[in-house]
Amino acid sequence: MPDVYSNILEADFAIQERIATILELRAADPQQVEFLDHYLQSLPFADQSQVLEIGCGTGAVTRALARCPFIAGVAGVDPSAILLNHARMLSQDYENVQFYQADARKLPFEPDSFDTVVLHTALCHIPGPDKVLEEAFRVLRHDGLLVIFDGDYASTSFAIGDNDPLEAVAMAAVEVIAHDRWIVRKLPGLLRKAGFDVIGSRGYAYSAACDAEYMLTILDRGADALEASGIISANLAIALKDEGRIRAEQGNFFGLITYGKLLAKKRF
Image (tube, rainbow, N blue to C red; front, side, top):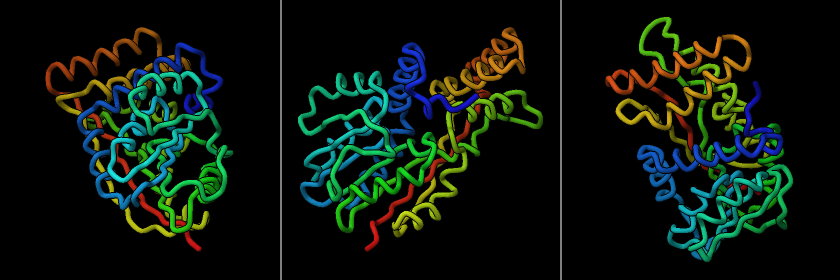
C-alpha cells in the first residue's frame, strides 16, 4: 500500500480526519516537543523573519514557529483542505500566521519571499523531493536558511527480540507512512544538487517505552496495512494490535524511529 500522505487528496474525509488527530497527538508527544524546541532554539532567525513551512498539516509546527522571537510572519502550505481547516481553527489566536492550499512542488509565492523555509517530517511523503527543494530555493531570499527535520523511517522497529512478529508490523507501517523511508540519508546529495550548502546536521532517536500512545498508532496502521494487503487475517491484525497494548501495559513495549535534521544555506 502506498503512503497515504503522498496522495492525501485521494484519501476520504475519515482518513484525513484520522491523520489530523495523529498529527496533533504526535505534536503533543513530550519527545517530539523536545526535538522541535531543541532545533528551533538553535536556528539563527534574523529580526523580522518571514518563514514558510511546507507540508504544515494541522499547523502544529507553524504555531511553534509563530511563537519564536524575531519571527514576524509564518506561512503554512499543505495540499489538504481538511488538514488546513484544522490548522486555521487551531491558529485563531495567532495574528502572524497564514495558511495556503498548494502543492509543495509548485508554491504560490514570488521568488525571494522568505528568510527561512522549514520542512518538518514532510519531504519523506512527497514524490519528487528534488522539485520541492527547487521551489524552496526559488522562494528563499539571498543567504536564506532551509531547515529539514524528517524521519529516517528505515530505522523503525518494534522488535524486542529475534523473529518478533511486531517487526513485520513495523515494516508494513513504514510502507504507508513514508513515500521514501531513506530520504534523510539522501538529503546531503539532494541539497547540493538543488543549490544548497549543508551547514549542519544532527540525529535524534525517538524511543517509546513507558509512553507508547503515538507509536501504537503506527503499529495499528501497520497491522491494518497487512490485513488490507491480504497478508494476514482480520483476527491476526487485532491480535497484533492487542499484543502491542499488552506489552505497553506490562512495561515491555519498545518502539524506535530515528530522525535527522539538516540545515542548509542558499548558495550563490
